[in-house]
Length: 251
Image 1 (cartoon, rainbow, N blue to C red):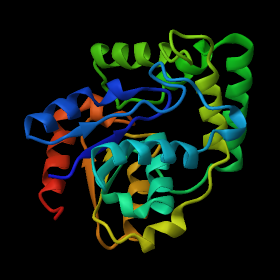
Image 2 (image 1 turned 90 degrees about the vertical axis):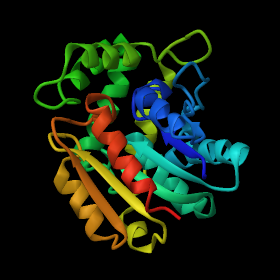
Image 3 (image 1 turned 90 degrees about the horizontal axis):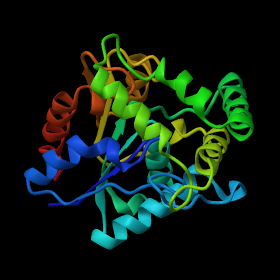
Image 4 (image 1 turned 60 degrees about the vertical axis):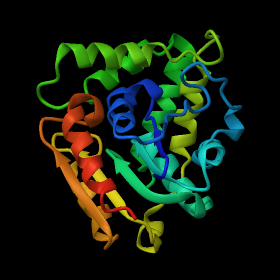
């Protein structure tokens, strides 16, 4: 079986895939969940070198460790990285899973908000940014356990081994703000594509997923009931079923 690589979102780490990794390994799959630079205790890249393309290069190196190509999934920022991987290293992706993400670039407003968040993090730390995200990440009725786990994961993203600041979070915001629009890539994809979206996702809503799917004849969309932007953690069993069904179609 092809290895499976899962790319975390912002500002999380590989721990967000715990339920999916356990499920897939239980089915006999090799699962790799890398921590992108600046997250999960890994050193950040310098800001001027932080981009979705640079992160894609890191993921490409992880794929090379386990085989020639892999089935790759990414949530939110991880989806941006996956799209960069599909553009720059298409030979390494056998199938793609775009989860609660989008292909278009930031609007002017979204870009400005990211730059404001960088200023806030550098001046006062990430507390206000984390609290702001907590109000947007979930569906209508998240459990306290999931909310606590997500908040804890965000709060532990101190850049560098053993901490040392919040450079990773700030630099990733910069990279996302400057990312290119990947919409033109979608019709060119020749690999199976699964799009997963929380039915209550307010950040990348189902309309965004359906728009992406309309550009990819080979793409399939699964909406996850009772989930917002963090569908793999909010409704892990439903996301696992969607992944399992999709994997059965990948030759």
